[in-house]
Length: 238
Image (cartoon, rainbow, N blue to C red; front, side, top):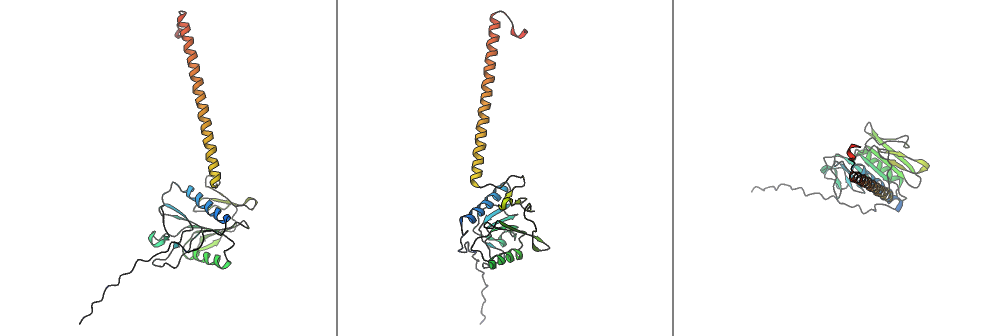
């Protein structure tokens, strides 16, 4: 009797969308994560092939749902915008995040941060930025010769991928867009929009006044022409 072997069917691998860890340990860390993430969204709003995410699990190895990290912010060039439960690299044309940010929190251990650096080093991150809001220390690494090497001077540094510039005046992190405009908080953006709305309303009111003055001048001129005609004078011959 011949035993028929059944073909092995590989089950779909499930990539969990949560690691059970909080996004941030405190309000300062949370605000900075949102601040950088949303400004990166605005920076690439018109480019459909730049994906920006915050606290999203990244699975760099095909068919491996154990090897993973969730950068505070990651930017991926060459991948379309859109919602994702996780970033499974094998389903994303095998493109790793090129830029990652980490905002240090009191709960982060030295061992954990070394492990994060080793992960980003191993799996192809091009630029890695680490900021400690408690000490205002900003550290960056840039891939060179297939290794993430520390950037000597971060004040004035311009990200090759993002085009943004980092400054640290008075030990406060400031980030500037390629056009020189600063990254803004939601409240600052709202205030800026309100100022622009008020300026637009003022400009429209001024334009309306100019139109009214022009109409009044035209009416006065027409009244003068009428008066001249009544006196037998042709205003066109004056």
